[in-house]
Each structure stands twice: as structure tokens, then as C-alpha cells.
Amino acid sequence: MRLAPLPAEQWDDEVLSALAVMLPEERRNPDGAGTALSTLVRHPRLTKAFLRFSNHLLFRSTLPPRLRELAVLRVAHRRSCDYEWAHHVFIGKAEGLTDDDIAGVQRGAVDDPFDQAVLDAVDELEEHYRISDATWATLGARLDERQLMDLVFTVGCYGLMAMAYNTFGITPETGR
Image 1 (cartoon, rainbow, N blue to C red):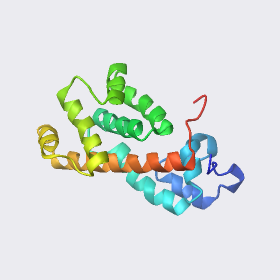
Image 2: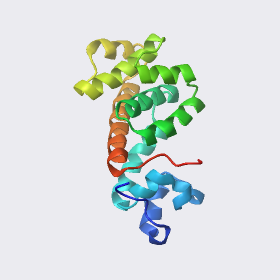
Image 3: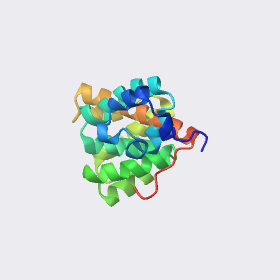
């Protein structure tokens, strides 16, 4: 691990304020925050700013949660981010993803044509930094413009998180 979680004795008001953007008071501690957030708070101002954006994507996005999780898992798989993968398999199942859906995310191929378009959008954004006209049209048949925007920003944000987690050496918690 290149950056270890911030030790509990170094948690101060600035750290707690940064986490208040996303976590309830009872989770604003090293155990409750988890490895990733406990590491990110080494830079509280950056964490606070980032969590505002991340909080929107996870809790206030217009994108249906199941589709969000398909996209996040595809990003995590493509970027080999074990931390993101482990957490979002759990979240994805809570949002209705099946084991078959999750296996399809890893293959990059699922049976449902619309779900496939979501995976294709992730792949296109990761490879070409844009969604093709054909994939955009397929997605646009069921998603409005705000949902499409939330999809693009979700892929970008979770790609950034995967890059940070992988670089900092953040791994999934054991026993959680």
C-alpha cells in the first residue's frame, strides 16, 4: 500500500468535515469510513470537494441505480480495480443485478440489448473518450439527456476512482 489510511489519532475537525459530505456521524471514524475514505482524507479539502461530486453520482443521479452499477462494474473490471469491484458487486446485487449479469460485465457481453449498450458505452468512453452515435441512439431510446449526462460522468468519475485506488494501493477490506 503506497498510502495507508490516516491513523485515528490524526483525525481532526477538517477530516470529519470532509467526510460529513457523504457519511453519517456514526461512520465518521476509521472503521466506519472504510479503507478508501480513510486513505483519501489524508487530503481533506480534496476529499470534501470530490465527495460532493461522487455523492451526486451515487445518491442523486438520474440514472437508474441498476444501470449505474452495470457501468461502475464495467469500469472496475476494465481498470482491474479490486476495491471498486468488491464494493460494487455488493451494491449491484442490492440494485437487482444477478450473478449472470455480473459475469456478463466481466465478459463485456450480456443478453439484454439495452444493458449491452450500457457496457458498450463504458468501453467506448474508456477506449475513445466518447460514445458512438449508434450507442448514443440506443441509450437515448430509454434515457433522457440528464440520464445520459449522468452516465458519462459516472464512467469518468469511477474511472478516476479506480485510477486513484489502484495507484494508492487501496484494497478491499477483509471481513466487511
